[in-house]
Image 1: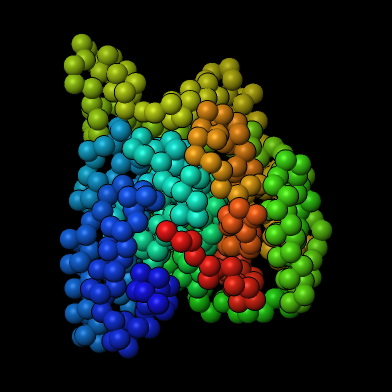
Image 2: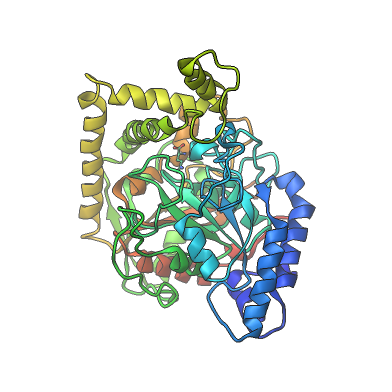
Length: 485
Ligand code: GLN
């Protein structure tokens, strides 16, 4: 096995035993990037010198007898997470030359755990999208079929994992942006409970929904990364002060007696039949393994999409007001006066989807419409949350598809926002309810494209979500398959 193909936990034990060095591992990851990223295009920025230096430091610390969770492990970071001294563009022209003067809390935590940062991965502009086609720079290609999208908005991170261009990665998920690309790229991704991971230094899209999540080649890696980034942060008032459970200890290959809820609203007309078949087969397997399958209903599911597309743009329109060309980022150079400067900076700095969201959100928040749209959407959001509360009286986790289709062709949905929005129809509800959700591979379609199984849990019950995922993964070998590049 080549070094870049290792999982984090495999690499860790080889580093610990001294069989490999962090420098060798990081060099292998960088070589792999140089070999395949001209086709995959997962990275916006590479930081090889810093990475090699961090690897050397990691080797010195291993030699000194230190053993911390990610010592010498090369990772990729979605480019919406601030990294001190390293460009953070959010996939937008408006932040093309932005170099943050500070790092996000999650970056500090990764570095404190010894991680090596390889670079920043591509994303839809400000994480608005489901394919990375909204990146102002380029589209990332799905390693399983380069003519297809990797999903989004964290498509760069998911593709980087699938192509073995890093061992683990961080993404952000506002309505599905970790889980959906994980599904489309055949990797594991978890969006934790809202408040579990600090958002300090995550460039804001929709503040009541945004969460940082982790990607791995398997459930164990995903859990390991999650345990490093989780925890209270006084710099994020929405982070919750509550102990972080031992996620590794939750990884038991046993689902006997567990109640898995299967929501009837998540098997809909229009979804790809092979997705339904694979997900139903996964549920059958979990039943054979001793889980109890419970039919449940989440009756307000059909409202999740319209509710999300009021609330997320409303919050985005407020959050993105800060890009005025004055404080940082792109500034239109030849403005005639201050209003012209604001207008042109935003006209040339933002792409079409971001402008669409700002307009939708501004409209939904404007006097006279606020009650009809924003307030109403918040009320329906509560109903969606209550659906889950009721469902979790009957089951321990909810299992369903992550996305209605496998990876679609680049360009196929780019001009049809509604079709694009529908790729998140199964992930939006957990975001609106603030619940944890994980996607892991559960099969392939006839074209050889990966299919994702979504497991949603109760608030702060990541351990049960991870346990069901781990048990399923242990019983199958989907996660061991890799694309040929
Ligand atoms: N695709 C959804 C959107 O465009 C979700 C994106 C995300 O989770 N960041 O808003």
